[in-house]
Length: 591
Image 1 (cartoon, one colour):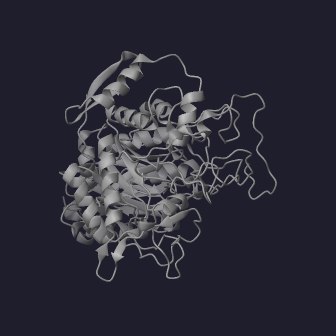
Image 2 (cartoon, helix red, strand yellow):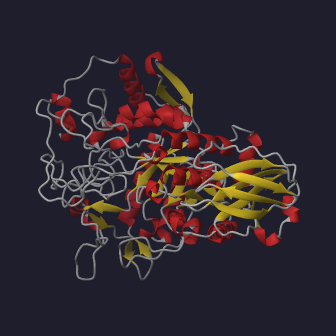
Image 3 (cartoon, helix red, strand yellow):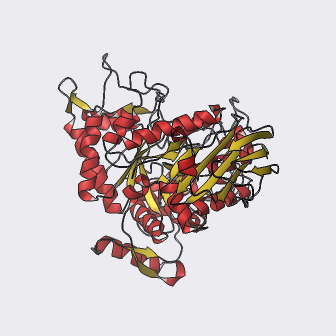
């Protein structure tokens, strides 16, 4: 059990351990660490990557003990987003495959932090789950002054670009026993993702660390009193100065140049797209320059905006409100949406009204747009608090079948991590920053310390995700993929607002979703299903969980008695369901 805000609590390091090399700078680590025997495969890989100009679309990837092989990769991430084809897992490389041998949650002396080399070990598991895109949270060296946590916040970068124009990569992400730099290892990781058909989206922080701001005052914003512009509640970061002359709408050319170099560095590594942190921290005019610039280099470079639908989610009081349609028009392919407050939507109509609002918004654009299934991101409390494993399964079934949605998970949710850390606000005797307190946002993924590999005690969630995404990805039936990604969305009328029922339909093929929103009680309802027949065979395509459900079929309707948070997906024979439904209940995203 986690105990919060305990004073004078200390972490005790093992007494017999070798000094940790990953807390030193990369130069001293390279000099002092005891290396394993020379690995000719990795050496060959790194030499080829640094000295050979490869044909367009070709990457060289390590294939374990089998040696190297050429892998053809063509970025199509922009199309994936706009066609609702991306299935995304958010990961933190410094914790992704950390080895917490003593089980106290914090990676200490003698234990192995997450890095790009040991993260490769998890890619097959991730691919098997049905994930085709990794959202990699920031990987830059972190600021050390007024820092949050002993490793520094991922969103307080000390630098973005190195002097040689390459992407700045945290030296802690280098495996000390593998030759090459942290940048080389990141490149190797990306290539291994591509080898498995996994796209890579990198997180671009919206702000910079205090250390960065002191080195680059020409890029930083000031308040009217001359003080640094700092988002409220975030002592470790400073905001960028976007305007040279806001009255004349003249952008800061130095900041534009830095972001163009950032895009260049991403494309050089083979990164497929960017998630723009707090995208509205920069105006539409800014993105109207940067996004087209990225497409001039890679037309398929994808963009995801951290933007919400209605709320002003930022702690910065004078920051503009979220305006997702402006983000779409500026060139973003997808945005976060509002699913993180689904726990507050107590009626089915809350979901249907929200989906209609977004489908209408997409249809006003020149090309299709999308959202992510943002039921839980790194900013949100673990969904396990809302109803345990059944809650994650229920929302998984929804985001696997809703229109205009690219399913999204943050690492650890797939096995039910509550994101509780025993070291929460404890004093650590060793730190890489000026802060010895292990900052933690309780119940959320740790982005401030060298922490354990994310994961919980509910492997059945991961199996359920795999089964749900298999329907979406067309593994059960190739036509299901087209129905879910491009088909109509039909609200089905019920006499109970806690029952969510809808159909997805395309070219005569129909999928039926039926679910109980109530996390605590069984719920019954009569569902009107135009064209439904009493002799319809019902085979649930999802794994069983929670309490059993019961169905009574009739012509044009079905009566259900569903267990708490129970969701079902059926294929039904209703070729005329669109024609027979109330036109107000039929929604269609344009492609």
